Length: 105
Image (tube, helix red, strand yellow):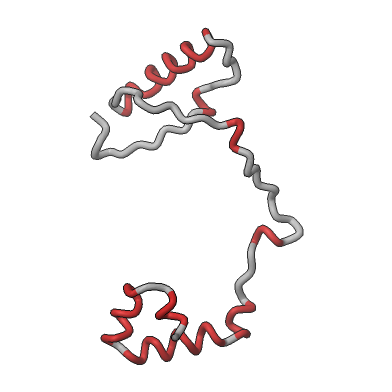
């Protein structure tokens, strides 16, 4: 079984249409000089230390949809509610809100 057959039918169907593609991919993957060019940037001496502890994060679901220009007001209300509960470290800058322009009303 080739490496491409191990990784699903999406690539395999393309290869069936173009047999030279499998030959090319197998040559590139098997070329150790080519693979030496790639490295994990986090293994480098000056790599940043990433925080993989998500205990300082939480998700708030169920907030109403808001227009982009009204988002600061919504965030003020969220901060006010959490401040009343004793959570005082939240600022507007620390809140990340993904925006989907097609869904923002």
